[in-house]
Length: 358
Picture 1 (tube, helix red, strand yellow):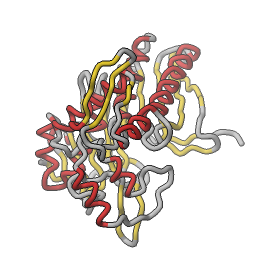
Picture 2: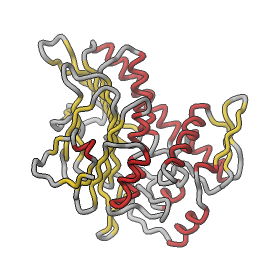
Picture 3: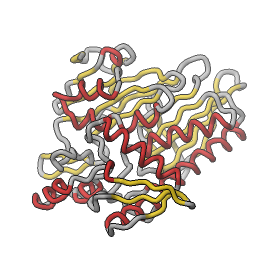
């Protein structure tokens, strides 16, 4: 069957027919400049890399290096299939030390720092709770964990600060003071991958590109004479809730309850676990934030989690604590809470949408 792709007007959400992977090139203007786009499936989601203004051979080679890097990171950081990270988790569970690569050690140390900054609301050490709720799987089945099991892992209080790092000849030795630590970097890896991809493209002389990993997006340069325009998925409808122009070096990230979730009766349980209660967070449909700077990609990924878990009452304080001035929360009833900094940047699909500017 011939592959066909259908894009929304904003180019963020895609419907794919045929193979999950497709390559194509689109000419724009008088044909002197090209928009080259390539897609793949990694990190459990659809990824897309768009390059503007380069020859097709150059763009294809650059994108191939990015997709190869994505697959490398996927294989390295998988939480429940054989990987460098899962091997470390197995060692921690046995109370043993394990040597890890300097790259993984640096990621874990950075994740520990930002976990502390979020006062533990971003906590990659709660992998056992994520597994208990059935989210260490490719398909999610409705489950209701035993309350005592949830209480067990809460009482164990796994934290990223439990990790101890020691230099070693072939890497870094990592051990944990708490055997209940099970690391899941699902809220960090996509942002890290965005930054790696941006660096790879820049080193190959690519100045104008858009990298999208399941809605976590970073922009390089422009799309011709205009900025890259992206859409923010409506958490309850198909299509975009709003759109905005991304400037060079800016990133946008969304955490929502509409991709990784299951329904049990009338209750929706998503993969975003509140580390304070051990239960999936409810009362929030989505959180979106706009970031910039040297670590815009990583920040766009992890920082949405504390805002989501803080809920309606605490999201604004969590944003300020993280230094974010451009953020938005869609609550359980669909009401949009937004900072003035992001309101100025967004164009909503519904021109009459009511906003609670905070």
